[in-house]
Length: 413
Image (cartoon, rainbow, N blue to C red; front, side, top):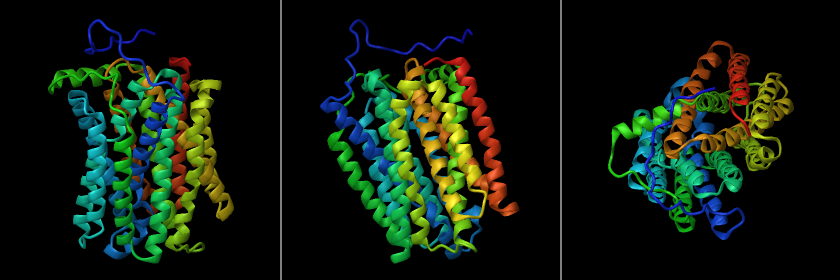
């Protein structure tokens, strides 16, 4: 199949680029730990409000769907900010500084959210927090794709995704216990301080970019050409569709499972509900294992397997029994993080030039899916409870499986 030509991206003339960081080297360990911290901080800050949605609904007198705006607005603005951050980092070349600044500002905003008394102000601050966090995800993926040699890229990307899983888990678990012991305000303040500490560790550990040549100034035509060039590649479009569907469904599950488990017959408190998010441990292992699995079986086999594992997990949440529900959440988490680790690493392999732009499009789809599907799940919850939510997500995963199978046809490796 013939694809439209890629845009021409500037590169240093003459000399070949510096060699990528080798798997197992000291710099490789520093990079993976630093990006692990960045992923941890980003997801703990972003998703720490998720177990608090029932608390917000009760305290501020809003509906479950309206309470989910505390998360959906953050992810919506994050999606927009990712495009701007990718373009900015391509122009300035300040990959490390941009990520560090984003983490510091977002952490400070999370602390500010803990102090507000008005629901509208809370939503505004959460939206700004999402905007600030846009400097991390796309730039982190681009940094790894540029700086790590191809043999170690899958493992490094998996460890970064593992950091996001750990941040997502502890952000929810810790806040659940702090809410029950103190208040949601103390919980948000504590997560903000943790984010500041992670940002400092990130800055100390991460080496400066060595394989990146910035595109000076802001040239709108250059950025549009880069985005359009990536969108012109069919396999990229299917990866973006996979990103939208898988992330949207994953967020929808954890947005509304709290409403199910705090209602009869479960009637869980916030501390117990927070323990549910320990299933993220399985996501940490599956994302870390993704690199080895793709090396052994190939992305074309592992990606649809991740989708099918997720489908099995959603199906297991349908019965009323708590054991089967937890088992379903475990499978769902394994499948999602496996899918995301494989798909995000695949973007870096396919992209020709301007990898920050390719990563930004993938993550734009990722967070738009989080916002749109995450909020839309509230309509299905209101209409028919959890069974309607699960059916909605199963239909969307049918589309995700189509995307994975199309990628099998279009790509190799």
